[in-house]
Image 1 (cartoon, rainbow, N blue to C red):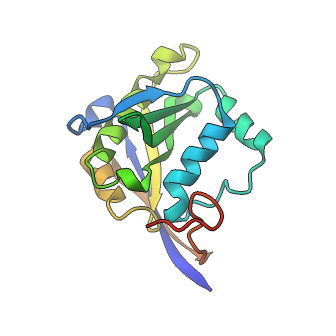
Image 2: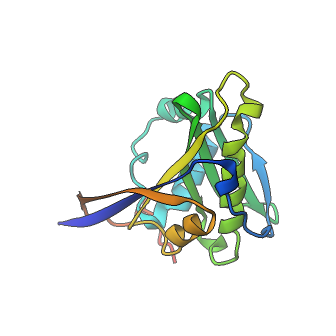
Length: 187
């Protein structure tokens, strides 16, 4: 059985587009040591119940290659010492930065953390060239979300100043939410 999945692409084209959210009750820290284990933990913990499946079959070497690439940064939100969510940035050509992944672990959703984390991540996308002087100054920050993502995702992106630039609909096989590990029951 398949389902129609709508994918929306959004962008900011100037730092002034960013509309920050109030600070959340979290501390946000860059994960500076590339760690496939930690990256996979974040990916499965955030995306398990909303059907992030594209990286589930990756090998350790694939995770290592992804997180060790120059221009890839992972920023992690911590609530009282516990990972609450993350944003992964990827510098692309010509001053473009993609927010590749963004989200919260289910236990931290609904606590007004998402807006703060997205604001912080977008700000780090805009100042990425300060940490990577070999990269061009950021001219555009973009991301995509889809109808499988959390119910508040699109509203959060729009409230942070992202604007829609593309919409696509495609049929995808319907898959059960994998959870953070096989057999996990989220909820």
